[in-house]
Amino acid sequence: MARSSPEWWRRRSLLAHLLRPLSALFGALAATRRRRYRSDPRRVERLPVPVIIVGNIAVGGSGKTPVVDWLVRELRAAGWTPGVVSRGYGGHVSGVALVPADGDTSLYGDEPVLLARLTGCPVAVGADRPAAARALLARHPECDVIVSDDGLQHYRLARDVELAVVDERTLGNRWLLPAGPLREPLTRLREVDMVIAHGPLSAVVRRAIGDTPVFPMRLEGDDFISLQDAAHRCRPDTFMGRRVHAVAGIGRPERFFDQLRAMGLDVVPHPFPDHHPFTAADLAFAPGEAKVLTSKDAVKCSAFASADTWEFPVRAQIPAGAAEHILEKLSHGRQTA
Image (cartoon, rainbow, N blue to C red):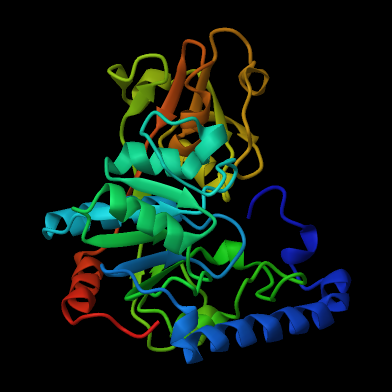
């Protein structure tokens, strides 16, 4: 979980137990809200194109951004023209906006700008997901499918396919807010069309998922890209015998550090809270020492990055059956929200 997550989310401590009554209230309100949207079609807005939701049931990062990138590539390969909508967490957009690939992360949010760069497809941000999607379609009528990033609990936007990305470490003590990190109970995973498992799942979570199809995901990368010159790439052996300052402001920074260590690098870890607004001071290590960042952090640091600052881009590797399952759902028409 992110470094800023409360300690009581990690285990079933005394404080977590004391907060359980509030969790029960939160769960009841969330369930009532969901039932209202499901029972009253007037509350739900259906777009003229199908919608695929990529979300999770816990607070914190589980790997949704690489899944959105993977999904966009798979949709394009199958002949679709996707657009992406996102909340734009950490940004300061008023209303809705289209995100340029060179957009300011402080305005649009780090993940939307990264997605615009990674996918090359139209990206719109806004707290009102249907409004963001309408704005995207008005500007880009060629888009024939919308991918909603982190929209599982935004029930006002009708959806045709739901994907839940699950990293069990982010589930913590598996209790609802505020006693735990869950936005919805584990049993919600029985209702989605697919679970993308970012790491192994315990028997407890597997039982909660029930018969929902589960596909594993791993993140892979090979090259490092210079933040000062994107045309300059290097391989891991460039850093052998040197200390590497690994900087990560993501939901699970330990995963990034472990991946670099598995490549044989001598890693000095620097974890930051998810969506951290980086400044040059955050990267002010000893002169000449290499700095390696995640792609999500690199988009926020390229303007002030010094020499020997590198991005380590990764891509989601997911079995082919997952894309086939999604495409089959789309081909069979829309489902009830």
